[in-house]
Structure formats: C-alpha cells, structure tokens
Image (cartoon, rainbow, N blue to C red):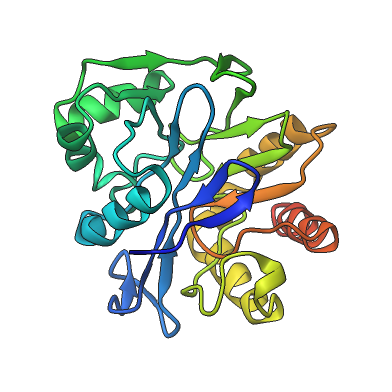
Length: 248
C-alpha cells in the first residue's frame, strides 16, 4: 500500500511517474521521464483534481485508496483534457459511478467527444465557485495555456493553486514530490524546456492568465507535471519565469 503524500492539510498528491516513455507526445525527449500529477482534497465533499494516463490506472488506484480507502469521490475537476490527464476518466466513472465531473463549457464538450460522457457533469464559469464544505473551489479559465479548454482551480482557504499544465516541468519526481524534498535546480532547465516546447507559442494567453492571478495569494502551485512548489522563493521564481518567457 502506498503511503499518503500530503501537500498541506487535507490536500494529497496521488499522481504517478512515467519512466518508460521516451518521447512526450511522440516529439520531445524525456531523458528523465515525466510525472502525471493528480490531487485529492478531503472535505465534506471529496475532490479529485485531474487524473492520469490510463496506462497507470493501477498505481493511480492504489494511491487514491491510500488516502480515501473505500470512501467515494464526489467531484473530479478537469483542468485540462489531454489524455495524459484524462485517460483514466472512464475507469474513474466505472469505479465511482456517482462521481460528478466539473469543467467549463469547452471541457464538457471535449469530454463528451473524447469519452462519450455527458451525464453527472457540473458546468463552471470563469471566476465561478463551488463549495465543498469548509473550502471553496474557484475557477480561472485560461484558454490556450495550452489548449482551448484549460483552466486553473484555486482553494482560497488553503492558498493552493491547481494550475493544470501551467508551471509544469518535464522530469519524473525522484525522492519526493514537494520542492522542499527535491533539488529544485534539477527541474529548472526541464521547466524551461517544457515551456518552450509545449506552451511557448502562447505567450499572450499566458500573460492573460498571469493577470488573472494578480492579487491571488499562492502558498502552493500544484501543476500536472513536475514538482509541487511550496517554498515561497521557488513559487516567485516559477511565476517570474513564466512572466519572462511569455514576453518574448
């Protein structure tokens, strides 16, 4: 049984590492692998933020059970529809038949197109909120960072930003998940390489997304790839890097 990995109180990492894939999207080399990050929030409602590639559904299942045991998942929030983050959605729906899938208009259209799922869905708007008990989920639509449907989910009570692919990095997570457990400098070049290859041509949408985040107090950045950023200095560096690169 996997040991639960806590990001902050009642927020857990349940992602997986992929050390077998040699090319990301069959284009970009992965000499150090890649992670597919997913997270659980425990509250009156249990929330799963993003999923993983279907190839890792067994590991994913064990990680979820390490946190929840036999408890159900109430909501699956999809910040990004690419298959490395939604491949396990059909498995999740079969395992948790009462799960409700949360997404914006484009997300739900793509969810139906990709997987034929149109029921038990919750439509959210830009700057909308969803109460899960003591905490709220706030949604920031960030189209073209780097797909049309991408969005971010923020928990103001915990100051945690689930940023989708934004602020992501290539590289499997070795020896830990949080930046405080890792050597952050190891991921610096891999973050630049990730930005350049995946997000780089969308500088204007990135700037729009960053403006939406102005004034948002961020205590942790939970991306779908790479480390979870929790050290204030590292959070500032990561946001500044995106700001700088998106201005070219």
